[in-house]
Length: 229
Ligand code: C5P
Image 1 (cartoon, rainbow, N blue to C red):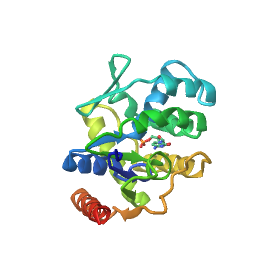
Image 2 (cartoon, rainbow, N blue to C red):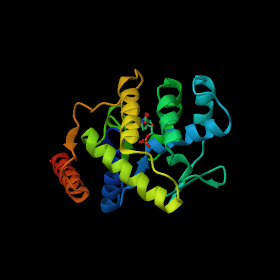
Image 3 (cartoon, rainbow, N blue to C red):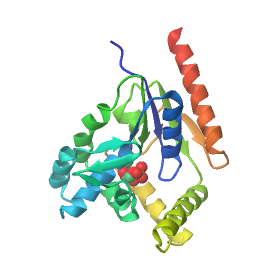
């Protein structure tokens, strides 16, 4: 039996890959894997259980033990809804610190691969096309200028802060946080952020979400025609 098709969408922080991947998955009625959420769940639980950010064994243990549930856009774990709790900047920064450990990455590998099932999967992250699904049918590497990414993330935080009645950090602060995370993700030795050699690259700085989604769907249709030949 041939494995279900996979489309990978990798890219740096706030490049818009989550929105694009989710929209492509909806269009094709494929499953969706937000791999960053898994690293965030490990970070969230490590914070809760006071596991140190440099305790590679302890963190790998946490990564092996997490049993998240994804349903209707909500993420729950240990009986609690953690959808918003894992999206804070604190959890994001810790997620990128613990993601440098090979032991943590290995512990999350099977959980990620287990999400591949018919009719197909769209997976977003940093190493989906290079490490987790090297045989993906279509690989996309999505980038955007540092300015466009900081602006998008800042707008998301404003929207969130307004609804939660919380102060919003300055755009300069957001830009520095994104830069720190990019550096760590790209410089680490274990599965660094990089485009797979066979990935299609898109710079989304000047493109709308609809335009990027249309491009990915077109490439996927072409890859299917190619496979059928
Ligand atoms: O994508 P998101 O910002 O939610 O990911 C949080 C962190 O998890 C990233 O900064 C990165 O360090 C890590 N991550 C990773 N590999 C993935 C997905 C996320 O290392 N496939």
